[in-house]
Length: 560
Image (tube, rainbow, N blue to C red):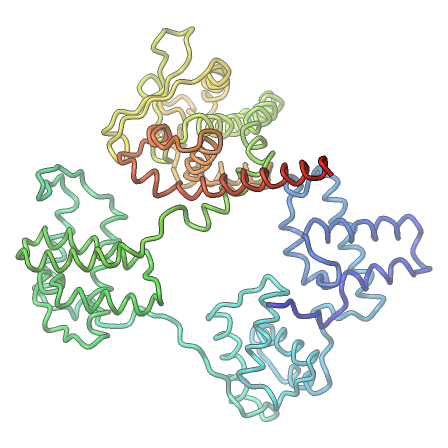
């Protein structure tokens, strides 16, 4: 899709006005012009495509991070400040509307007739777009709204989803009914997806009873049909299973299956019902089924065995599962793959692994006058260091206990080991990591000099204690780690994504070493490791091929 030309002045226009101004001091002209060029370069966009309006650029300016731009924090802050000053000057001196394109007389009159501030704000951008394109109020239709959203998607950071379109269309339609001067043509309001269908109380009593009994069984240690013992499910898993079953009933009713038919959970799971429901989900997904649909088929097979369906019904459920499994996409999600691309970019991962040393320097400097703040900084430094050397799951990170998981087998003068028995790990695989002297010294410094300020006299053996004496809250700690990494390096890296980073880095230096990665991440099955990370070797192969072609080109030049 070609990028539409701006309907308003651009950075290039602002630069031209600044360079030709006789009112600005030469030094200010030079600073502002340089800042506009540098920010455009940092955004990786031509100056002609960037609107010379501060309200349009504010989000993009704030999103820039000095580490990813390649400048120090002070330099980038000065450039941002100069750009803001330049855009303010340009807007004032050259009649640039503070909120975009100036409104034509017809649109200005229409906007002034809106009494509600929120409605006026929702319609403002659409009105200015129509003014810039010469679309009169009476000519507004679905095509005009679609054109606006296409422009909005490519030139702004504003939402362009179904809800955003519905919001604007609804605001327009309310004005149609409340204003005598408003055009009388209404816009279509896209329907939002809703959890429609029968409520829980409308479910047959037998089905309610069976679902409650099944969910209660998940809270206990149970034995599968293969004789394997399973630990209790978490509260989150149980809520998810309940929501999936309720949604399945509603989907079945929506496609025309009478709810009275579901006298039991067995009736719901039977392939005569499960098949059409999975087909309906697939149709909603499009050409390729989403992971929810694929996973639901697998869960129904397990549920069918739990309910002791006859073998023919189990075989039919297996066929449904196998058909959907063929569409399961191997490898990382796009979100995690985007992180891996950044991690494999030269210099990015180095900034992450060097961050703990920087944080510890900050902690040492603030310890005399702000001990708690220093201790929290040191805590994050130790957590990041551990994740770099031992890419464990978040649940294990916050649960580390001194002298139980974090131990010195050789005595006080030896290096730390980090060890988790199989029953403390999500997939029941024992984990053992050895730390070098440098990491051991870092952890020792934290334990002896900083951690006492966090336990506040409590008898806690958790490496990362919380305010109550127990372990630190997982979600809070994860957010603190992620935010601190992003603040300093510009890379938004979650605790779990350290695992993907570790696999990507190891496979980059050791192609095909899936067995080592399997052990490093604690996977039970080699196929799990291969399914996740086989695509990374394609990236490496493409890079190696590119280098080979470049060497060949240089060889040909030398021969010539």
